Image (tube, rainbow, N blue to C red):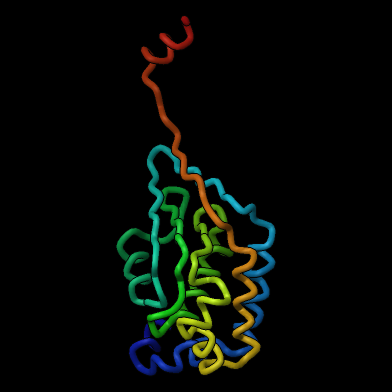
Length: 173
C-alpha cells in the first residue's frame, strides 16, 4: 500500500486490496469494534507510553510516519487515534483500513475513537462519500457503518510505583 501510494495514489486501495478483501476486512472490523465499550480503558505500564494521535484527515503518510517514529503497537507502545480519520487527504479509505487492521491485530494496544468527521453528515459535507465509491464501489462506502460502533472516548491511566518508604507511611496510617 505504501509503495502504491506514490505510484498511483488515485487507485491506491484498489491496487492494494480487492473489493472482496476490503469488504471482508470491513465486516471483521465491524464485528471486532461492536463488542467494545463506549469508553475504553487504556492502561499504560510503567515503562510504556500512550501516543494520542488526532486528526489524520486521510493523510496516510502521516500515519505511516507516526508508526515509523514511535514503533509498532505493543504493550509498551499504545496508540489512541482520536477521531477525524477522514476527509481532506487523498487516502481516507486507506487510513481507515490500516487503522482497522491495527486495531484487530493489537486490540489491547490500539484504540480508535470516533470524531466528528466519522458522522454521516460530515462525510457528505466534506466529500468522503465520493472517495470509496470512486476507488471501489457503493458497497464499500458502507464502511461508514463501522463508525457507529467505534468508541466515543478513552481513559488513559498508568501504574504509579511508590517507594517503599511511602508505602510504609501509607500502611501505618
